[in-house]
Length: 319
Ligand SMILES: NC(=O)c1ccc[n+]([C@@H]2O[C@H](COP(=O)([O-])OP(=O)(O)OC[C@H]3O[C@@H](n4cnc5c(N)ncnc54)[C@H](O)[C@@H]3O)[C@@H](O)[C@H]2O)c1
Image 1 (tube, helix red, strand yellow):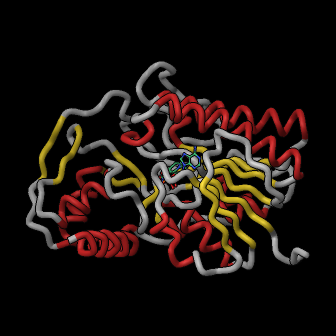
Image 2 (cartoon, rainbow, N blue to C red):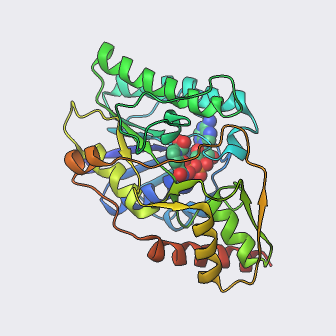
């Protein structure tokens, strides 16, 4: 007999960076958590502390195939998130966003579960308004190398809203901006993990372009709190809601901060900017403040040392 006081939650992509932190939070909040992951970019290492917990279950599953389980809530996070990984098999990236979303929406419809989609700031493409509000429709190249991800996520949002309109599903769409913290994939080529690893290894820090392009970075604990709060909102609150940290830093500033915090003697080198790399990206989080009472609390000065510690331990464990 199931414990009716425990909400049954499915987290797809739960062995990944954000998913593993989300699973930890949900277990801590008293949920019965099912993590479904095909380990494409995620790893069991991220969820080792949860494996002995009776309220945590791990299922190796690729969400491009249907899944039949009984749950009350679904967080749909499965999708490689960094360009290196999502461009490695672009057709699979589109599939996970389109077929995967259809499968998870179909499941939510069948079991009447609430479902949250981990969308992305990439739906705004290379934006020509700053900062980006949820009403901005984006500036996306549909045939470029990033399209499998950007357009895949845009199509997933379309599917979520069509299931909402057509089938009255309780949907929640979060547009996640750059997030960082422990459990980030070490080889995903993202700016923070790249710089930290290069600094810890004493290698030069590579900046693409002149380093004047800006990014905003949200610490993972803040992001998980935002996702959790969005799921708790009343039916009818669908989003999309931007979740991210509005504080902007230039890439050069980040590199300098990481050199300072690691005490590394690495040099900074400049290389050509990849195609379709956005110049600026900054969330407008007015809606998240209003609807979720949420705003990020962890500063870069607090979050970076924890992330550096994580990578430092990872490198030591591999020596
Ligand atoms: N981290 C960020 O800064 C960021 C920004 C915007 C959006 N997002 C979104 O948040 C979600 C989680 O991102 P992340 O940073 O944790 O990435 P991640 O790559 O660490 O996690 C994705 C997880 O999904 C799993 N996965 C991939 N394809 C799958 C499939 N077909 N079936 C089952 N599992 C599959 C991977 O193995 C991995 O565990 C993604 O949907 C991503 O697009 C993340």
